Amino acid sequence: MTRTIRQTGTLFYYDGPQVFEALDAIGGHYLGVMVAPDDARDRYLVVGADPDRLRQFRLGLIDLRTMIMDRPYGEWFMLHVDSGLDGDLGLEVIADPDIADDLLPVAGFQLQQTSTSSVAGIEARARGNLVLEITLTPPESAREHRIHVPTYVKALGLLQTIVKHAFGWALRDTPQNSRSSVRRENAHILDVVVPAEAGSFKLILVGSQEPDMFGNNEIARALVQLDQLFDHVSDPVEAAKYAQTRRGHLAGAYLRLLEFLVAHDTDIQYEWAEPLSTHTQRRGISINQAKPIIAILSTVQDLGSETVILTGALTKADVANGAWRLLTSEGEFAGRTAENGPGLGGLKIESRYTFTCTEEMSEVQTSGTETRLLLLMKHEPA
Amino acid sequence: MNYREPLPNDCPPPEASEIADPRIVFRLVRLDPPTLDDFRSQRDEQPTASFRLSECQARGLSVFAVQGDCQLAAKLPKFRGRLVCRVNLRVGSGFIQQTNRPSHHTWWPFANYDILSQCEVAT
Image (cartoon, rainbow over all chains, first blue to last red; front, top):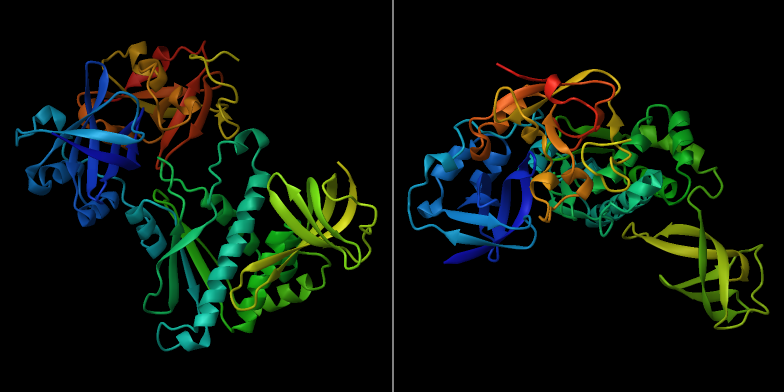
């Protein structure tokens, strides 16, 4: 008789995944531990795991032998692996209720407890994923955990936007020959998991993309960039100077977030950790710190603009009002000519051109999300 | 640069560091004194397996920077009875990168580094 599971994470790694967790098709949790190989194939002892006890195991509060001995229904399984833990894994149900001692770990194998008692650190460990905790203090949260819906929606929109652009910047800082190994798809997306906690208005978010087998989440790259933006908030000149080194969408998103805080009369604090972090990263900014930074950055021309180069076939060219559309390999882009930019007269529909544009982001007032405007600065045949 | 095992292009990765200062790492070995069999990569042990990690990592050696983490690994069923070996690394011993926390590192030894003479079973 068999059962099928899929690995969801590695809890201890040494010359291969030694302890892993998995799920079956109906959400049942499992814990697997490598035992001595059989006929040169890797073997794992696998048991079902209660989710709450699994959480305690991840936090280092229960040892592995106890997890196995106290398994649900006394069931246990063997997994023979021919080619790694990818994909569907077929478990062999073992009829003998007793597990031979040589298949068991010695008592005392406990994952290292997190040295941080912060919510972010504990949740990261418990969830096996990066956790970002955000604290806002709008006036309505003074007496209870409460926030106006528009403020909540806008804060989430601005947070997601700044993390998205921070991730883009982090990729730019990554050496070219390492970029291909970065798992980019939806890497910047955050999911809300705990929408409110008593004490102040707190949000708990996790990386939406699954962490890798070591528990690392690509979104950590974006949060490192964010930390650097918030490093100098007590010195507005330094803070503004650093923000300008991130000129483009990231700096623009940063300025819009600061303006949001002032407009909604709230500070912001955040804290983040990964599952095996020994300490959390904590940053924040008050309204009084934000105001002088806004004053400096608001005078910087084109702070949030970026140059975008597009090559493709022209599908629209409205000479009168300057509107155009270009079909590239990444989709169709639309924009207008810049105020001092070139005219569209003489361009031929379906001919290929390279358009050099300035991309400006502006904020949708209610949601904090962005709209993008492409302004054509130069064009030439491709 | 010759490594103990053939490595793919762009391996070790840019994030890895060439060992420039003496340091100690810990690895589990079967016997005292250890043999070179204790220093084979996953790829060397399983030439045809498909691993859920990069080929570069699969061709490195797992070591711990903290002895306690190595002692913890020795509690697992596959490694019961194994001994903790303290390995001295210095200039000329290869590249190393922390690849998991708290102290798991991947070590890519140079071909001419005499591992066994630098490995002392810890009591």
